[in-house]
Amino acid sequence: MPFAQPTRIAPSLLAADFARLGEEVKNVVASGADWIHFDVMDNHYVPNLTMGPMVCEALRPHTDAPIDVHLMVEPVDAIIPQFAKAGANIITFHPEASRHPDRTLALIREHGCKAGLVFNPATPLDWMDHVMEKLDVILLMSVNPGFGGQAFIPETLRKLALARGKIDAWKNSGGQGIALEVDGGVKIDNIAAIRAAGADTFVAGSAIFGQPDYKTVIDALRAEIAKGESLSA
Ligand code: DX5
Ligand code: ZN
Image (tube, rainbow, N blue to C red; front, side):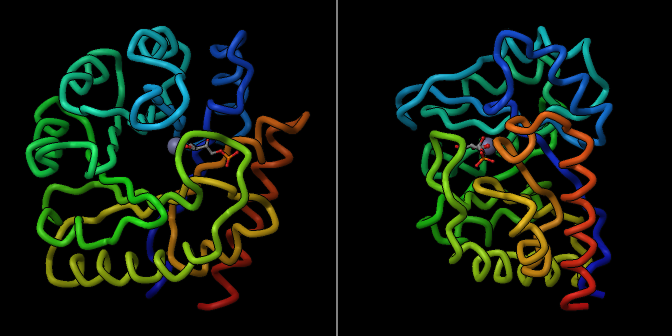
């Protein structure tokens, strides 16, 4: 049963109109988005600067959709309670940016959020092996973090298949379910192959917010996801 998992589309606000964020969130959720992907950049871990907990808090009343906070910050721990308080539902971080990733995962859950690790293109998946029971999400970067609108790195497909194998083996041995999310360069023309490689949660920034009608794009992404399932089922 390679495709037992539900699938989710998580539009990245990085590509939204920052002057109208509340409206953008409402529109994209009304158009079928499952999660709102919220990219946090600190001009230190990555060479760009975006949004913090105050923006998350301001958006929270505008939607019931889960807010998926992707931390590209270093250090990590101090900002976690602030995002939990601001209404985040899922918090992921880059393990090499935390001095103690196991402790950081526990901290996220203690604050009532789902926890996950993010892997840059060159970061090995080994970081997940000894913290499996503390994971709700694994996020594979299919671009180097810091900017939207970059091209999908094809090697990610092999890495997704490896991550899918680890997650399924864990589940089959009685472990909890872990979402497998992919982030960067996801488009209508590659999402079927990304699904076929094992992803179940798809971040898309410029593919959605760059278009005039969000529902048309999200419907097309879902149709391609379904094709990806029939391709290799
Ligand atoms: C990049 C961010 C991504 C980005 C994806 O560091 O983590 O979430 O917004 O944007 P697209 O979909 O345009 O590649
Ligand atoms: Zn992201």
